[in-house]
Length: 218
Image (tube, rainbow, N blue to C red):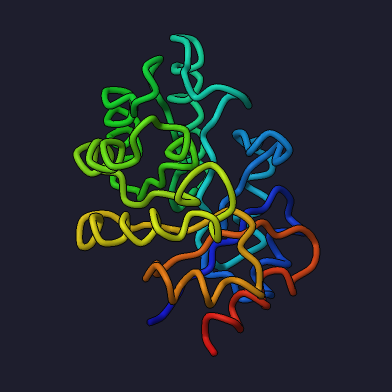
């Protein structure tokens, strides 16, 4: 199985390192210390100019809760428009309601606003009260892929749920495993779950990504 490795980056330098390491796609964020927020227009433009692989832009107005106010929702709309105008190849979103379920209406709206660009639902999914229910909501909303650790922790701790999600998602939506994915556990995660995509943070060392790429191709 050909496994795609997505590098999570927050600078031109880390984007270049991920590309050199063999990443097939980038997730571009700001503020990785809070799980990622929307990067600046200047950073989006600079990364798009620097790399050749697809760049998916995080659309998240702040860290913390995934329940958004009307003002924050409007900010997300504007961020999507700006990112697409700057050449974003895809978008990364995530919104829940106060009950802990996927915010179906907002997710559907954001997917439509993406104008046929692929959309990933980020690890807000792992905060939902039912991953099975959340998965169906995302399929209905037209989301292309889900980033999940099979729970709020590391992917190696969520193997059973990841395997179940891959089975339920087959042919309808892509499951991408993330959460402390490393070169020493990537092969095991793929073999035990059947995921075809992995997500890992890349800083300035391309070996963070190349080790994972090498492991899944061995």
